Image 1 (spheres, helix red, strand yellow):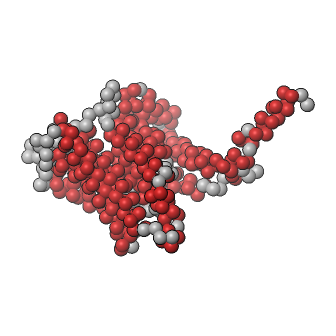
Image 2 (spheres, helix red, strand yellow; image 1 turned 120 degrees about the horizontal axis):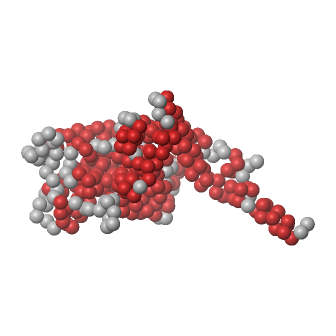
Image 3 (cartoon, rainbow, N blue to C red; image 1 turned 180 degrees about the vertical axis):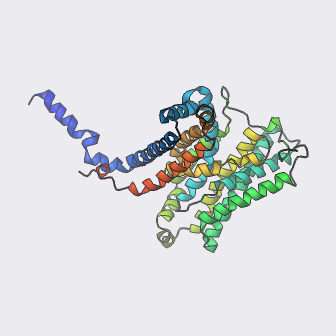
Length: 369
């Protein structure tokens, strides 16, 4: 055997694809990318089939989706703008998931955060813009945090299922929004569409220099990175994951599970509340019914598709933001209803939930032959 042949044989023998040890070490990480990716592709294929049944070309569908989401710089900016609240609302689901909790009330926390931020701005009419903006951030995070902490408290101290309570709190938040913008906080000048008075152009947070993407995207990325560090690089995060894995064992070793639940829920709600503040201070300029745009519900899909990983939430939110941004182009070019994007998101959610049964069951990713 020549030296060249021997080197080739050795290279094949130690290649990652042929190394059982490599797959045993990284198989789980590969699963977290491969399975959600396959679920997403399958959902797109099924959506394309539905479009085909209505007489449209699926290839045109995918082309216009790409063009509307990432085909031009304008499309990119639109996608990134929509991704900002998705990152923050996804954290509202992902953080409690570390404790084994399923919180789906990000939409409610977003609305309460938006109302709180608006109230803070209107209460400081003569304050410098920076002071108003900081007050809005604090009020938005406090309002959203307390809202989700209410759901955590019901779970911890009254045994109420957090999934049900957080969902019901969404509808309570919508009712509060409608009551305030149509009643005590209503601007008398808003005749056709009830809303609060404007917070003032000087108090808007503006766009990142050189782009039309507002600073909410930076807030979201910073929050996601900070959440990752908190969960995976601190003793608090380790304690939360221990409690999420086995709450009985966590109590036996002396962990204060109640404090963990309340703290995580507050941080989760604060993230969604910050999203509400961003929507007021960067997009709407006031509180009105437009705030209930469904970002909180889409954030649930983002969190599940990202497997509750705060860092993975960032690219997934950009992807889902792009899909949402493409809705207008699909409506204009293919004549599809604007709600078609929501149908696609529902299909993706179903496939993501169904694919959960595949984790740990793909033999070759465990180094098995």
